[in-house]
Length: 188
Image 1 (cartoon, rainbow, N blue to C red):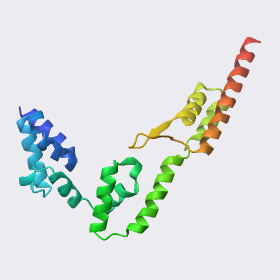
Image 2 (spheres, rainbow, N blue to C red):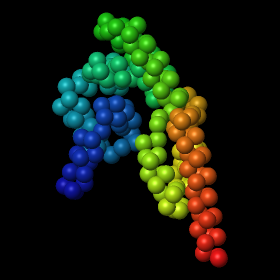
Image 3 (tube, one colour):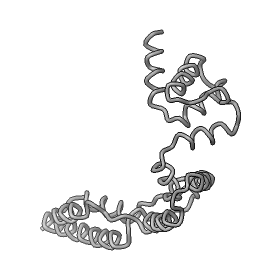
Image 4 (cartoon, one colour):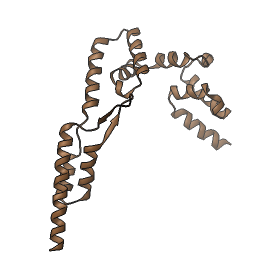
């Protein structure tokens, strides 16, 4: 029983405040000891758990305990957060009198970066492997070409930017040519 309790304690300590509140609000889905540990953990994090069954509790307590940087992070990265959460972040930013205009510009830039994709950091390795005749070059090229990511609205975007995808096409061609040459050399 003591091992189970210690296991619960480790799990609870690793949970976010939101997760702990969800556990307490859905206490019928969890064992009593687990819920009690969640309550104690929230108390240790200076939460007032007396009104936890109130539906607005989660919203008020979580936003109250977030740092300015955490609130800004939610606001400027709308593609990684639900619309309602971004709207709440905007309200919190206004309430804290943070520079909303500057943050809106940063949010637009963040959206563009998400949608444009990132640069493939290991493209150089792909070229080396492709010239060496490895199948790994083909797999890397396909990963760079067809990998997508989804924002919270369900829209799909390429994970990698246009330049990386162009390089990936070159990797694919090089890999196929080198593999074909290797096969021809083996046959003759």
